Image (cartoon, rainbow, N blue to C red):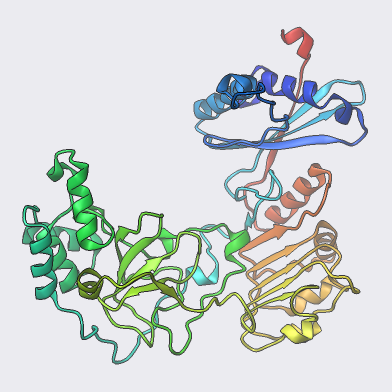
Length: 460
């Protein structure tokens, strides 16, 4: 047994839960759940009130820090990164702790600390993360692209900068597996933007940022902003769609082998040279990859020369693809019916809370592009209609609807991942059992649970 399964590891946390929620734990069926990772935690203990006249201090929460750190130390010792837990009171009055290991086939939970998306197929990613850029016939650099002008301008602004050699540029190209466009080569011939070249001089770094118009990566830090560089949990990624409008300057992709990230705007958004532009764009345009979005990028400038020489303001992102006909949300605030959502281009259907009766799926049966269905508990009139949706790769349902499919042997075998919609307070253990039933259908590693019992008074 590893240390994460030792009662002494959890004793401080159990004491906090007991002391903070004695009345709630005395109620039949009540429990507390949480998750602890190496960098974060959820702990069902109240926030301490600071002493009047001063801010909250670390010492005010030392008991919580101590409890969490003991569990985190055990995770490190076991080579693990996260653990979920549940605390309940047994009929004999003792506290029981359920230590839950989600295993490699379950993503980090958001709504539930136990169950995120179930990864039914090893290594599978949602369709937008498999989407590659489309060829745009006639795509060419913008008229403003002028490597010679770009280089002259930067040498005037940065006369003392240390530039990259041709050998260093060739090494970067070999590492990336792509030839750098001429404008990007011109930039790095003026400055290779290495911290050691500035000898710890922050002012020198600022001068480079001001001259270029962004926080410039060093030549060694260039990377390809493909789909793998923009990961997203299945629970959210399955609801996304990659759509490029006929006049879009930037293709609506998660990432592209033609997006070469070279800088940051200071707010976490990455700047990249785009070698795979949209129908209305230019090869070599500068795009901004918004860190708050998972798909698409905005247009910063039609060329790197334009960005550096003319300093255009801001950046523009094409319209959001998270709307009909590709993504449809049927609820009281958006579309009123499944019939209204049915369209040959429909990829994602989300059926949310509704004031009316449960809905049927007949209008979307046979839609070949429909790959995601999320249905809140109680929203489906007949879950078995899901059998007619033959192209699903992600399905998220409430426990009762999953029970119907499991009992009928009707869980779609096309799925790559699945979700369990947990709404309101539900006993966690039946949800874990349901998740394991689904994982077992694909012979995936199961969620494991260890029950620890101890005497807190004796532990003192």
